[in-house]
Image 1 (cartoon, rainbow, N blue to C red):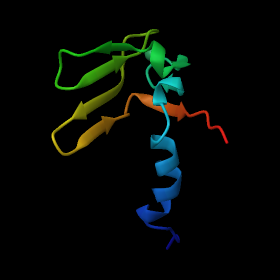
Image 2 (spheres, protein in one colour):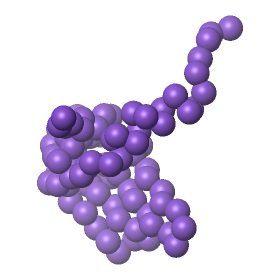
Image 3 (tube, helix red, strand yellow):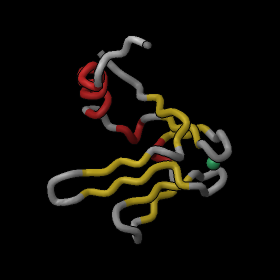
Image 4 (spheres, rainbow, N blue to C red):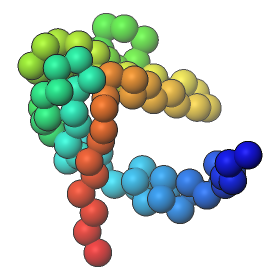
Length: 87
Ligand SMILES: [Zn+2]
C-alpha cells in the first residue's frame, strides 16, 4: 500500500495560493496547450457564475460559481496554473 498524507497537508500551500491575485497566474489550456495569463482569458458571465475560455481555442479553461455561502472552482480545462509568489 502506498503511503500518503491526507488533504490537510495541502492547507499551507493552498492557503498561500488562494491568498494571491490569480489573474496574474499563468494558465495552460488542456485543449490546445496555449499558455497565457489568467487576466487574458475570455470570460463570459451569462452562465451561472463566470466561464473563462482559452483565447487560443475557445475551450473552457475554468469556471467559478459563487453562492451565498460557498464557491465552486472548476479547473478541468487547465493543465496547470503557475502562480507567481513574492516574499
Ligand atoms: Zn486552448
